[in-house]
Each structure stands twice: as C-alpha cells, then as structure tokens.
Length: 294
Image (cartoon, rainbow, N blue to C red; front, top):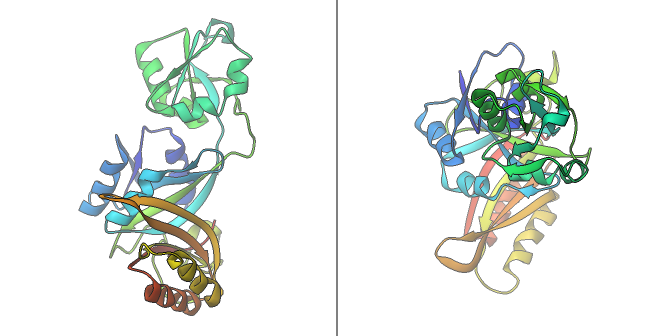
C-alpha cells in the first residue's frame, strides 16, 4: 500500500500519515515535489491515497488543496489533527553556539519568530521544506546550520534536536485530510459509507466504530444579491452545523467564487436532505467527502 505526501520524508505530513493510518497497516510513504503531483498519482492509481494539510490553526487554509479537491476525481476519506512542534535540528555533536543559520519553510520560520528574535546571531533562511532543510544540511555536512523541522526529520536523516519546541504558540494544529480516488475502497477503514453507522475506523481502537458525522462540500451560486444567503439558509433549515466556510475564485470569471463548507450532521438522512436542498439553490454542488470528524 502506498500513501503520497507533499514534501520530504520526516515532514509533518509524514507524521500525520503515520498517526492517521491504523497500526499494523503496512504502507509506503511516497514523497512528492508538489501538491499537483500528489493528486496526479492518486488519480492515476499509482498510490492508494494521500495525506495532505488543509488548514493550520495559525496560518489558515491551504488554498491550493481546495482547488485540487474540486477539480480532481477524489474524495476525502478521513481527517486528523496534528499538534505542530518546531525543533532546531543540527548535525550530531554540533553545539547551539556554533549555529549561524536556521533554515526552514517560510511558514515554520514565521511561527518561530520569538525564538529567532531572541537569537539575533542566527540568520533565518527560507527553504522549500521543513524536513528538507534537515536532509540538506546532513547531506552537505554543514556544521554552522540548523533546520527547523519535526522531530521525525531528525530520526529520518540522522540529525540531533538541539532545542525542542521553539514555536511561538503551543496551540498550533494542522488539520489533514486522507484523500483517495473516487471509486476507491479507501485505506484502513476510510470508506465512504452512506449508512448512519459510519465506517469502521481502526485508529479508534478495538470494538469502537465512530459514526460518520462530517461532510465537506463545494458549491457555487448565481452572481445575484442574496443567493449565498438563500443557500446557507437551506443548510440551517436542514439542521446541519456549518463549521467552516471558505471562498475560492473561479478561474476566468472575475469576482465569482466557489464556496467550500464543512458540515456536521447527525445522520446520513439529514446530510442527504441538506445537500438536496442546497442543489435547488446552487448552480453547482460537489460533495467532497463524508468522514468521521477529528
């Protein structure tokens, strides 16, 4: 079984994949250079699924992934939350006072401003990937450079954590989606059932079968006053709980948008009725997946 991620091994996406899939389920992580490549591999059947970040509690949504979810024949099979911890990682034996550069993804650097500000002798350097920074410094043998990355990156590439937990905010979480090809049976219990009982989720523990209670949906409305309000009113009438709404521009149609919503519901019948009502108000409705809320 193969699971794709965007970025290098040892990344937060790698950690999320390990945490999301059931213990004992054998799988290989396939690192991809871009999110587009991840989706291409899923659609082509080269991998069984992919684990991708969709939203960070501090940085916000990953816009590109919303666009790809809409345009590609995939569905969300599961979601999880990962507590993000940023660690200063260097070659074994290197001391903190020897470090002159700290490399990482710009988002990670921005989430460690306080620590970096307290160490003005260390220059912050943008890099394409958190775990990739550790991979690079280990391969190059740099003794004056550290990476800011998950602890898994240190284990993956033989680095050493000099300072753990240098992020500014403890409450730093990323929400990940397990994405599979439409028509696929899913990975490790990530099926797309329509019954109220929901899927069997091995990660929930023996004998526990949590009920599918969340759906992600994309829709568009006519470009007229009040159309969005009418669509949202249908969701309220159906009794589903709107927990997130995100808008994305429609390419080639300036100032028109596709709306992405997350909905919590109590039964399959309730969400079915909500989507049927939404369809009466919208120019387009696409259900992106039903799954167990994290």
